[in-house]
Image (cartoon, rainbow over all chains, first blue to last red; front, side, top):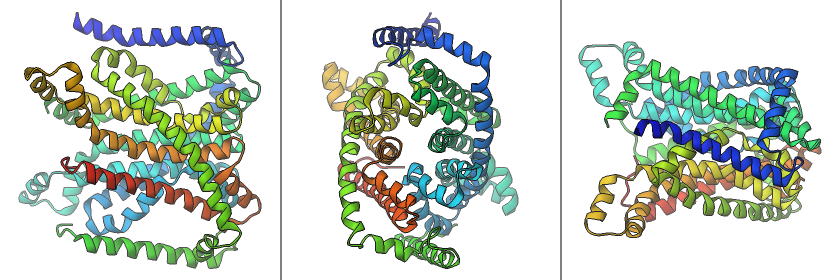
Length: 253
Length: 254
């Protein structure tokens, strides 16, 4: 009975919000806030027509370029900061400066240097995501319990073995969490950069705003939400697969 | 690794690293023209430039207005709402998925909507600042109020505390560390929203200064604006950190 209730509650929540959306949409009118029913119809139409998904995939592919670069650079940097006090002290000021720097403020300057092409968008995505990946990995690496390392040492593991067999597996959950947080920021940055230079998916958003076509606009936003939620779910599934002990540990505690 | 640095050593290394960074920047700057990469000295000089500095100062005060309005509004709504959603299990199960779904939408993508609803000026800038930080604050507060240990509340109840009494004297104090976490995340996002709004709507204040400098290919002025935004962020973080240390000395941060 309790599990049934728990399964039903999110559905009731969604139904309430959809109902509210419909009522607000009907009373405000199509040009201010399209009701759920007309967005649904528009969404099907846009899926059939195909431009939305085509632009989305192009944009996502380009976003992944900046995001993977952020992972490749951010994760080792976070590990280095977490495991060595000297690199922690040297890198920390830079990380705390850059993590509060808004990427939006950098875009005009980056346009001067890099133009408005793919390099610009990848750089913006990279800069938006990398610091969160660094910080999450850093917290994980800093928190590895010394006992685990001591066990490794007493079985006379060398540094390479300790890194691959103890440190890295202990970091899996943090690497995945870092990637999840980084990806959210990467998607935000992708949309921002594209709306700034008016290309790809961001251009579609801009255009439907200009045409005051709120049902198209809401459809585009919904797709973004879906992409973000699906990517998040996939990453956390992967995390559970990589480090099944982590979730169990949390449940016990 | 095994020999922890003293606080002084860490500070010294940090300072050294910043000096090295600035030096490398200076070296690189001599290789490029001033239009692309100005030297750090010329960027710092902008802060004392008799024409630029007053403009910058005026822009900062203008930007702070929408920052303050949006951030305060977000706090005023997100904190009570977050506490409510976190404390009630039914409401949490009902609305958490919806909140996650909305949180997944990049706030910048809402810009066309904000233009339709609020126009191009102060109202829409405040709205964007609000949107950028509202959900981040809400998520932290919800997590925080779910984290309050039931045993603490049980103690309060067994001593005959009413629901209100428990909320006021147990839940709120337990929530304050999360409130500070929300302030830290929220203020960074709000400052981000502030400059984003000034670039995406009608360009005013710091955003206008930034846009004009880049259009005039004055990279050192543009970097000075970016540095100002960055310093505002750092200042906000350290003020919150200071307050947290003073008010929450009982709470050990891990």
